Length: 305
Image (cartoon, rainbow, N blue to C red; front, side):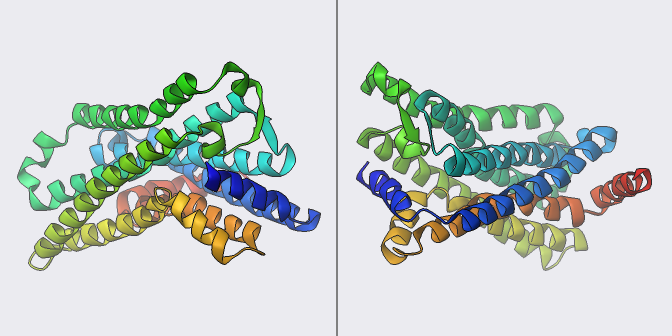
């Protein structure tokens, strides 16, 4: 609670000039629109062709894309609100934060599931069809949402139990720490994030090295899968910065006192925006099948224009 209060105080003390604030908001909005425009094209391509929505790999991918679209939209809205309205009603802030946390925590789990699917396809190809079915993939997506729901909704229940009713009618600078204050929530968050981090990284490392070993004596597909897992790992590394956000922001506050708001902006772009731009590269560009159909979609849009 002290860290969050200090962070808010620092932002108030070092508010950006009007020109800098406009520039940052324009950059964020343009990046958000660009990423979501590309992702919308990926979703359109997925929905138009049966070859994709009958394949568990692409179902997991498009779930990640939809999740990224929602996450980018919500974080951009919160970013703009922080500069325009600045303080909003706690109840509205809670709704924004809950939805953002759902999508943020979904991403690493989805990436781990995609890595496992790649591992099964390369290291156990004869069993891939039996293990990775459409029904099991949809159940897995449901499990991802259930896991994050238990993680995120507990913040709301603890806040409802510990805060007076007047708190939800007050106005705050919208952060997770201000919407869901309390030392118990912080301890729960640290434990949950640590568990998520360990499980997901063990999954990524195990699948990568098993595929790496297979790729030495196997086909080109195995080597491509190895590179895909490596990209997942890089994307995951950026996403995992969210799990360490409180500690990282505390370091930023101590090291960059004068340029604190600029450091927050850089942190936001690197942690929240950049990872969402990697998903289209992994499948929208690198995957031959998806690239072929996505290129058709882009050519049709260009012809219409």
